[in-house]
Image (cartoon, rainbow, N blue to C red):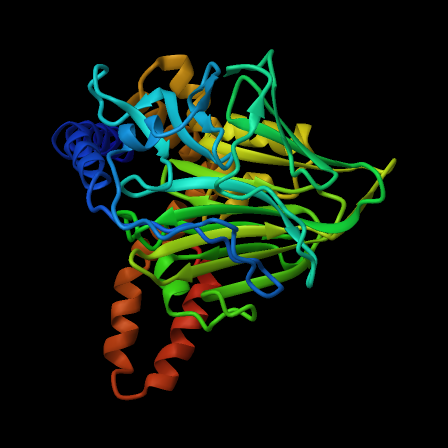
Length: 447
């Protein structure tokens, strides 16, 4: 009876602490983190660096000497609007960057009237964070390729789940570049890049994708939560690098910055993760790719995750095409698991940091989520899960309690043995073991 009362009291106190912490600390901390996330500004540049080969500068790319507000940077050139159930923003027609993404269903604070979470921002704005997709020329080639200054032509003005957008650009030398971008109802964009050749034109091109983030963001800095570079790189498995680790790494082979290169990975993804959000490049899961996590120095610190695919040769009558995906959004378990299954992305569920005890924490999360949707209250969900875990472990706990009770019952005899053989520790242990054997007690069962 006393044990039952203690259990009920412990559960009640735990619930009180949980609700009190949420009221007095949880909400203020969320609001403080949102304010910190708006700190700092930087002066951007934009030359992409290529994993596994000599750095290839982007033609016409100039170092920015000043930067505008985010709104001014967005308004600086023509754009394609993005409008999906989860995402809003735009794609720059100059350069083709996907660099303006806000999350429709998440806000900066718990106030429902606060601004939506801004995930991606264009180059030239404070704390720029954007993605780029390029074709790189093979060594020694001087073919005219799309750059950050290229103005693409679009076949429509708005990207929706039902209406993909196709961007086109003719290099004037016999190559026609087409990029089709489609969106789903969630957080996944699909980018299909194609190149068509005419006449006698023949060239080898390398597909290259990059995520760039200017300035180190505010991070939680806790041992149990990873923020920074994240990826699953084929047989090399899950790779997690903090911003500080990238800053302290050795120069990459290409000499473009400090970081780590991963060669010939088959299956997986590479990207950058925050506590709640992530941006990830997902190449074709059946062909090898190289990836790099690196830190670049300059007027502003740049953190870059990039993916380099295999070279492809285009000639008249033999167009080339690559397909890659871009995840940009909230790390919702159901959404991430759904993408992992539907697109067969290798270990994409590890985009979420489940910790070392993945096999236990993920099922426990699903259990808690179920009871949260059932009750509408996380406090009650935690309480129910706690009780269920207690019930599941009751047989083991019951044995522990029984062993503890037996140990308590023979405590007087144990005291006598210790007093009697106080000077002979060996004999003392021998007598205690005989007592345990006689009373059928396992001294470690109480643990």
